[in-house]
Length: 110
Image (tube, rainbow, N blue to C red; front, side, top):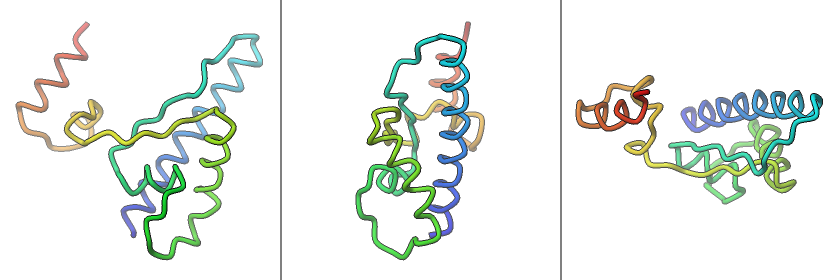
């Protein structure tokens, strides 16, 4: 449960930043395409954000969970699960095999 809570906190922090930037862009008269898609590689976090039951007692994260759900229900946000092997950001945050690193690093070349 500890890891799931940390992943949810990270998701909420990301979404708060995203929502701020969205409002800033809209205040400048720009249009932001919605829903904004957030990819997470933690299945439990994706399930919580999408309102699917995962079991356990998570009362302490309900406020964060409902913030995400409200944005999703308004059509502003979509949270999707992505397998860790497909997550390009893992090469910056995790020890990966050279094969996974090369696969994702080639996508980042300019």
